[in-house]
Image 1 (cartoon, rainbow, N blue to C red):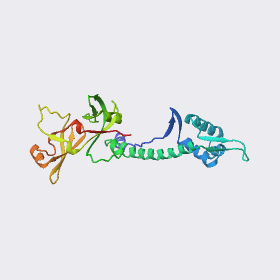
Image 2 (image 1 turned 120 degrees about the horizontal axis):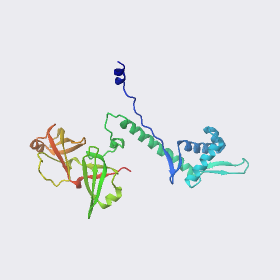
Image 3 (image 1 turned 90 degrees about the vertical axis):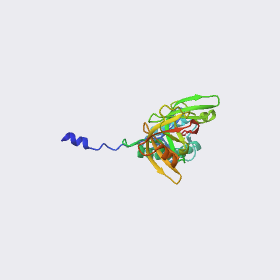
Length: 276
């Protein structure tokens, strides 16, 4: 009875967290805590008052500010001595800009972590980085993969991506595009293919075809339009490809849910993109 009770318990919900901090030249500059200390200095004009407001000792506050000044290679906080008030402390222009930039980056970071939490914490659902990035294009077919080969030719380069389902996507792009995207083995990249550039075929056993991309699978759905039909094919391995073909082709090939077919795409029709 106890074993049954344990098995029926739902696992706790997973959460995604993260923190943001700056480095300069490989040295830690600071994160939320130090940025808040800089804000306190700006508000109070004194390290002593800032330390008291922030709930830390003067020595700890000064050590943190001194470490930030040294790591930044440029003063973020300046102290002046003398005068009727006995001196003061103020943020430099660089320090003020650092606080502003941290606020901008932290807002973006929190939004990204929230997006990750929405889609990554459910272990029963597939993870899609494209959904997290909220990438929107008119291209129906978008796959995130890993670059597994880059082969240079006389004019163009051949780049091979491997998708999570182990399907291979080959793209032919220019040397300049390879350099501009910084494509290299092991890097993540996105392959995009217009549905109108996907050809469907059946009965290809023993047939040689020049198309570099050949993805066999099972028809998941056929949606008929006025002239053309949208055919979704579940590729062997798990990924999905969408093709737009004529209704005559659907009838001729016998395309219907459950039917076997192969999607064909020329390497020159594959567009590659990377996140920045």
